[in-house]
Length: 172
Image (cartoon, rainbow, N blue to C red):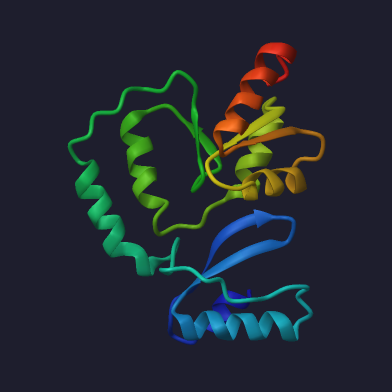
């Protein structure tokens, strides 16, 4: 694995398995730079440094995970009506304590996006809604699960289109 080879005593880990051959690596900057060079030398179509503010989804984020754990210690969460697919397991959870534990865990662990989407599709999900700015996740979903519907809702206009699609077609 490129990340372990590039680590050389530093942190270099798979942060996101986004699907379609796209894996994001996180860790010490020098180690990630080595990983980019190794990937390029082995013929990767694209290997580049991402402009991010922190080494997300790796063990270097443990101090943030500790802060999150303390912040959530007294939070009361009710069991969800539908299972939550947690990205560190790519599996459903309904137990509130376990959901909170995995929420903290996702700060330092790999996001298993490809597996999470594949799990949902295998269990009958045919439409995905991306809430927030951009359409990155919708694009990743389409590469993972051919034929599913996606809708990105990031603006008031998008929300209006979503409402119209939902009411008129009952597709979403």
